[in-house]
Image (cartoon, rainbow, N blue to C red; front, side):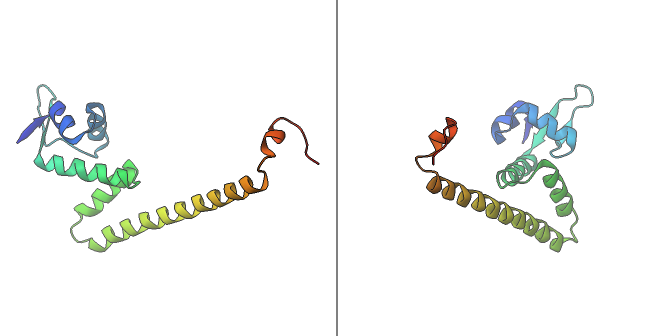
Length: 128
């Protein structure tokens, strides 16, 4: 089945403008581009690819990381590379979780330490 860009947009829940941008940067190329009208047409393979891109975005991949990952996937001899790529992203997420946990813990300490005093500090009054 072949989809016009508007129908494809509705099917994969990606705005037409975004699809055009994805095409421009080489992230998601339509299967067919009409030479005369420049209309983009997408196939079932593009549907799967769009869903894959959406999933990677949902777990925190940047568009450039997705492009890089797709390039690794296209290298059929590089199974270890795909695993390493995902492992690296997991490590980045773990570091971010740790950083956020530290921030959360500091805020908890501040809330306990300054409970009831925050308003007076904001107002410019000093508690002695």
